[in-house]
Amino acid sequence: MADAKQYSNCHTITITEMSSKDMKYKVVIVDDEPLARRGIRARLKPFSDFTVLEDCEDGVAGLAAIRRHDPDLLFLDIQMPGLNGFEMLKRLPRNRHLFHNFLNCL
Image (tube, rainbow, N blue to C red; front, side):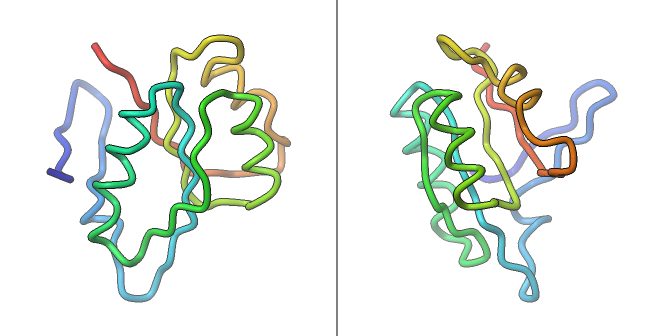
């Protein structure tokens, strides 16, 4: 369920690879689809290393959540109405380095 595959030149890490007894990750989820947000929460639930601080339905709310919570990990939809995932990342402060995982449904 949490496993990922390697596609072309991109390396995708799995949740299991990130999971560590020494690390705790603060997570924000940004996706306009409620089912997708619930699915990510459900997949992270078995891993105590991940704490979902907030999930947001659009890019504007996502930016506010990032500023409010200062997460370590962001699950981000690419195609959203209004502010899409790429535009959202451009609006983050330049000094903010955030590990993000793009979500896209083909």
